Structure formats: structure tokens, C-alpha cells
Picture 1 (spheres, one colour):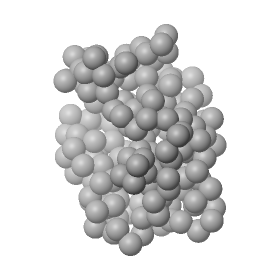
Picture 2: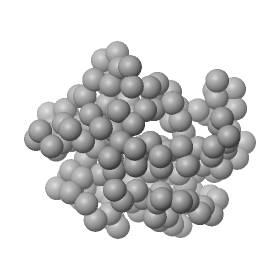
Picture 3: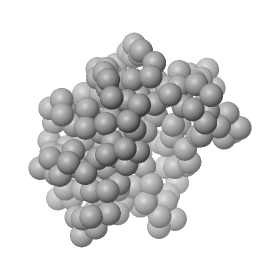
Picture 4: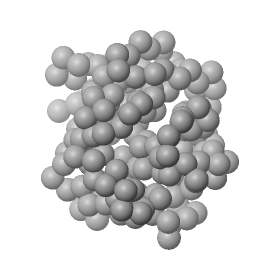
Length: 175
């Protein structure tokens, strides 16, 4: 889970923001764990994080953007595939994660949640593609550059009805 940013537009690191009594970082860990991910890695940077149920990975280059967080996570992950999700998507449901994992188990090496036919979060990427994702993750572009460069690899996974893919960039978005 990508949680290293300072949340400049929000006014503070989004990982520490509470929504319905729970920090966004804890909501995202629960989302991934409930969806079937184990282990869960949290990439931290702007704010030091202690998170129950997850391993925190420090990203000393967090100011350079999301790309460095993707690189940090995939460089230490020890799994056959990784589900990537930013911390600022608190309305996602674990069923979306389960559907991506099911697509992977059915042969998809890259799976992306879709909502009303549009790609959103989360995404799953098999370990065989991590070197290419790491190579293309720069600045504020995480896995997006890889996904755009390899559209034939991406299996769209309909996730309508599993939650909302909206991200929260301002306090007003938490409604």
C-alpha cells in the first residue's frame, strides 16, 4: 500500500487522516488483508507509521513521488504477485481485491479493477512484471506507465458494486 506522501492538497499526510474513527492507513491494511493479501506492506515516507497487521517499508525518496513508493514496495516484496493500492482510496471494498486475486489465479498476470468500464484501483501485478514496473515508475507515476505501455497484458476486472474508487485529495472528499 502506497502511503508515503505528504498530502499537500489535503493539508497533512493522508495515511494519518481519520475517517469514521479509523486512520486511512489502517482502513487500507484492513482492505488488503480482508481481500486475501498476505503479507501486507505499507510504504511510509512523509510521516513515520506504525501499523498493526502490516510491515512498514521506509521510502527515503518519498518526496520524488509515487514512483519511488512503487519501487520501494516491489523491491522488498516476497510474493508471486502484488496488489497495489494508494492510501487515499478509503471507499474501496475487499471484494475488489478478492476479484483481482481470483483473476490472477485464473491466469491473469496483470489485473486492474474497473468501475463502469473505467480502470481504477486496486491493480494486481505478477512478480514477473515487477522489473518492468520498477523501471517505469518515476515521479508521480507509479504503475500507470507500465499499464499504459502493456495494455495487452491488462485483464480488466469489473468491480462495480464492491465500493467506490474515488480518491480523497481534500477533506471535503471524505463524505
